[in-house]
Figure (cartoon, helix red, strand yellow):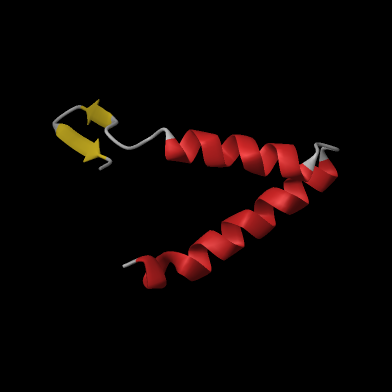
Length: 60
């Protein structure tokens, strides 16, 4: 599964680097903050409801 998502992750990281350069944000600090957010996600649950549609996302 991780191997399938690797190209997407690479594109997201490249887009984040370009965005940091455009908005003059330090790239290393921004990527570090993003990594801390992602590493804090395990155990998180997101319930999204709109009308009759409901989605539960649980991150292990």
